[in-house]
Image (tube, rainbow over all chains, first blue to last red):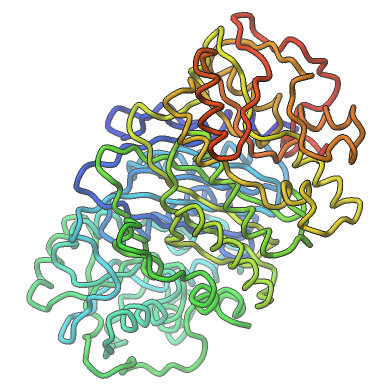
Length: 317
Length: 317
């Protein structure tokens, strides 16, 4: 078997970062050295994707690599931060070289398209999991947080909801064609980095929808000390979701399914049209789904059953 | 079972960082926001500790928490970087609350004593492992790397060697008293942060000894394009190591055993005395063990057998 050092050298040492990458010293020493830009804050987050908890172990390796980075980048999107750097902690049961090459290919492709430099990592033996630390930059005071939603704000979501849960259902039924739009949304979600950057001067608060719309909405409400009224009939359902799951399950997936990685934003009604115009320029919808109010709790929906996806609480919806 | 959110809130949300911590926004949003100091480079590294690969699963939880941070901080020490922030990715098979409280206590105690603020993390279900990303700062141009060792330099190590392997051997024989010095060195190693900072203007190159002296020396030699001559009889053996392992095995542990987390430095002979004086002020020895030479390879030692610790290559020595 190849050694840890050989594996790292072969698959996880990208081409030397360009001069704009802010990487005075990349992979290969005890630490990487990074050069943050003056006047910016660092936004940092880590997410670990575990086989058969967060993704099917037999998903295509290229999708597993892509997805592990995507879910971490989604946190930068929700802060309105620009991605700069990442570190990967990979645990492997064995070192199937074809698998690793495909995995690294998926990871590096999203590094490239998002402008994120892989600057370090480690490889250990263990059940398959991928921990990705991302680092981005946002000018001080321009960040989007969860705690600034205000009564009267409009709540709006990017793109469409329920695709994550719909894709998982398809996978469980045996669908394996990654060109199927729902399956692609589940296994290769698009972190809404450009949307977060475009809206950070308009929105009051934001979060990415990883645990399910209701669960993530409640994080915003709790952090902001407000409540919300939703209009469930306005929820933008992922294309093909109702046909795949049936309408009641499709709405449940949009409300409670995880893994959508869209942004939920709280913004003044007066800027909604401008926000929609900006995202339309990216080919992305921004759909109002409710309003923020003073009264605690979420009105307008029946909360019968599970409330988004939490580890240690049970399986996927 | 408690939910992920509850676990994070209960055990991994430290007291709000002080005003000097450079944490405008800590645990609890999509990302933490950090304020790097002007003129510094960020030094970043990630290390994952896996149960029964890097530490015994039945080691005291407090030691597991402490150790997972220590091994990551050791990489900052080797760069001469000052620790600032960390993120933790914890995988748990269950959520035994007493275990978690002890684990968090060990982790937080080293955060506190090293001046490292825990700013984020995640908790997933899986076999026990702890991934720790550390971020430190070092003024541009003052970092210690692996690639600047020069022919004629003295090679020197901090503290004593072989304690990691000796402690592991004791653990395997059933010793469970963490006050035993060798066991303490294995399960609660001290990252040599103060030594790295004190020597960064004197040393040419440095690495921390995690894979074993010879394996880590070879990283320096390869990165610097030089060779070395060691004088094995000068190796500072951990107290009690010869008595515990016997002398031949003690030397093997000092040369090839992993988990020592001392620093190996390459520095001009002219500054050795000053370097020793500075570390003596910290109560730490600095022992010359050889010299850097032009000829590739390592002279002066017989390399019979395993060469330090690499995952995927087999068990601990």
